[in-house]
Image 1: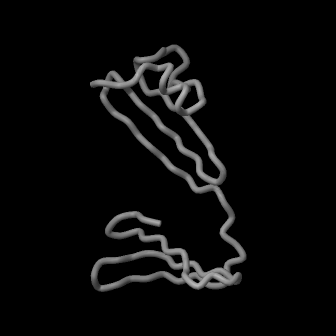
Image 2 (image 1 turned 180 degrees about the vertical axis):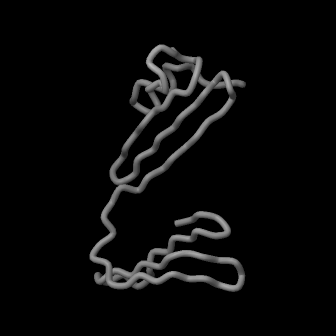
Length: 103
């Protein structure tokens, strides 16, 4: 597996990797980098020896003032939530849960 140097990952995420186990050092085992910019947080985890990587993106924000929340189930297989806010938004925020997760 081809990966960047550890220093490049530290530069990119502005974070030292946190290993899953204290006694296991890079590049062996699972290591995670975390970065937050504004309301979005990214957790990037990589295990170079196993050739696996994981990405978790979290939108950290209060969605308020909420005016209405609906659950949608369509015959096409679509399932999700729609959130309407009391402020002057014309379109709701839609969170699709099936067939794929999308915001």
